[in-house]
Length: 291
Image (tube, rainbow, N blue to C red; front, side, top):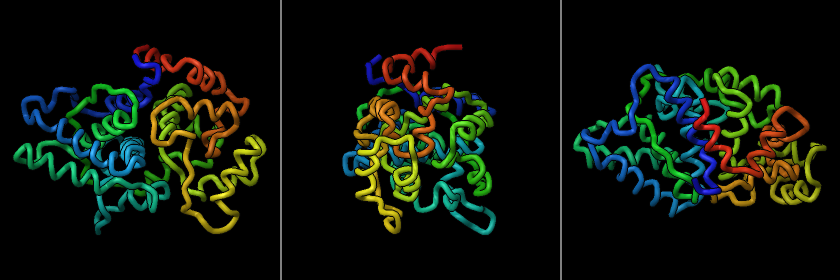
C-alpha cells in the first residue's frame, strides 16, 4: 500500500455495505454494462481537472448521502410536494455542490449502457472513489448494486449530519448512533485532507478558541472577518487538493480549521489515534482489514 494510502474512505464503503438489505458486489455491472465504471471515471477526471476542488465536493456528497438513512442517493432528490429535500438541510443548503457533475455522469452512463441500469447511489459511491484517486489518493473496490431511494428527509439530515461546531463527546455520540466508533470517527474525519470550508463554519474558532495556533488564527482571520464574508473559503488543510496526511499533522499543531476537527486532538480520548495516523498512515489499511 502506498504510504499515502490511508484508505479511510473504504471505512465509509464498508459501513455503507452493512447498512443495505441486499447483496452488493464490485462486479455488479460487469455483464450488465462493462463500460459503466470507465465512463464514471472519465467524467470525474474531467471535472476534477477543470476544478480541483470538485474532488472534495463529490466525496462530500457521498458522505452526506450515506450518513442519512444509508447510501441511497436520497440527497439527490429535488424538493417537491412529496419530498422535503435533503439539499435544503442545514449542512447542505448553499454548501453541498457537484450535483451537475453527477447529472452529467448519469446522462453519459445511461447513454453508454443504452438504458438506465446504473443507480445514482452507485454513481455517488464510484465518483467518490474516483475523486480521491484523481487527487493523488488510493483506489479501492467499490461494492455495487445499491438501489435509489424515492424519498428523502431534510429533518433526518438535520439530525444525523454532524455539525462543524460539535465537541468531542457530541461527535462520538453522533458516530455511535450510526454504529461507528472513535477509530471510525478519526479516520473518516481524515477526509478533510481535501476541500475547503466557509468562513461562518470556523469564525468562532479563529476568534475565540484557546486551543489554536496564534499565527494560524491570524492567517485565517485575513479572509474571514468578524462580520460579513460568511461564504469566504479557507482550506481544510495546507494541501486541499491533494489527498495526504497533512490534516492530522495540522491537528497536532493546533491548526485544525473547524471546531470539530481540533476536537479530535485536544487532550481527549482520540489524541492517540490522531498521533497514530499522523505517524503511521499504513495503520489505516490495518484498521480496514481487522475484524
